Image 1 (tube, rainbow, N blue to C red):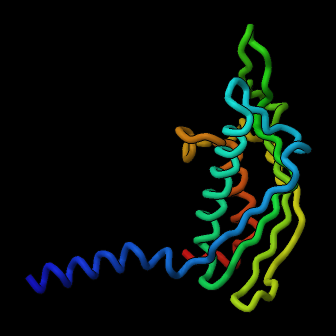
Image 2 (tube, helix red, strand yellow):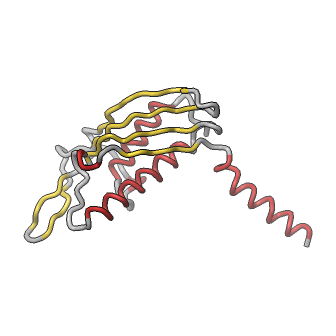
Image 3 (cartoon, rainbow, N blue to C red):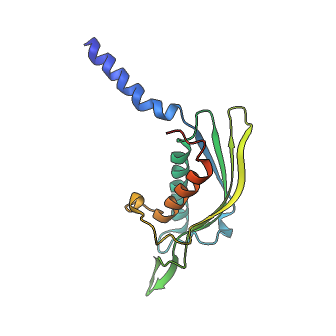
Length: 165
């Protein structure tokens, strides 16, 4: 019985540990009414926007987990232009993905240590004009496929020296 309790405690600590020793993220959003393209197609605007923002926030949190502990990645998103463009198709609107409608996100970030001291900060325009050329198998069954891959590439390039494997 003691072995089972000890083994259970060990498994729980292993599962919790990776998240305990990782950076976190905080995302704030600019005026979404001024964003280039956060169009929902046929979905309710508010629920689409909230769902899309939540997806981005989860993705930023996942990326931040690869940074050293006791750091916080603060991000302010000032513009979003999703891959593709919405077009009317009869009575419906649908997002058409073509290579001339590439994804773009404007943001400012500040990576701070536990004392609030800035480690790295910048205002950037992240875009992927070749988004249809690469292999996007990693996120093919998820929403924001192209945007997530674009953010992965930016994050890896920007924080390469800080990423903890």
